[in-house]
Length: 178
Image 1 (cartoon, rainbow, N blue to C red):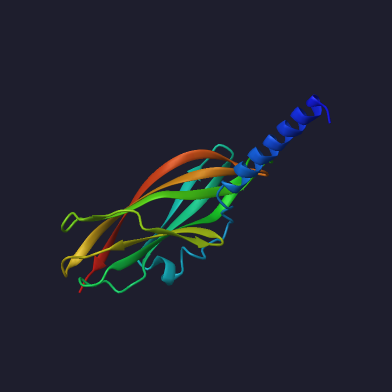
Image 2 (image 1 turned 45 degrees about the vertical axis):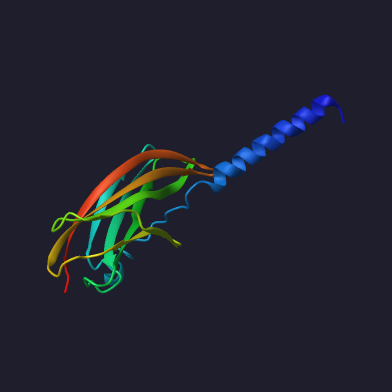
C-alpha cells in the first residue's frame, strides 16, 4: 500500500470516527406523544405548562410537567420530577428528523425561607426528558416553590444534531407541607 493510499485511508477513518462521535453525542429524538405526560396526574400533579418553541427548522409545542414523587414532610426529603415532552411539531426542512432536548440545570427555590436545591438526577424515559430534584422542607406550612430549568434544544439530522437555542424557564408551584 502506497503513501497516498495510507493517507486516504487515515482521512476516511477520521471522518467516520468524527461522524460516529457526532451521532452518539446527540440527544435522542423527542417523539410527539400528545398529552401523555401533560394530562396524567402521576406526572403533573403540581402543574403542567405548554410552551411553543420556534426553532431554526421546526416549530414544536413542548409540555413541561411537574410532580412531587414523595410525600412532602419536614423530616423527609421531597422528590420532584420535571418532564419535558413533545406534544406536536412541524418540520420545515426535509433534512431535519426531529427535535432533541437536553436539560442542563434544575433548581428549586422556596420563597418561605429562601432555601435552594440545585440539580438533581437525570432519568431516561423513552419518549420524554425527565430530571428529578430533592428538596428538604424546614417548616410545616404552605410553600411557594420556584422551579427553574435550563434546557437546550437540538435540531436532529439524519446523522448528528445541531444545537439550536438555550432556554431558561421558571415555574411556580404551591406545596402544602405537614
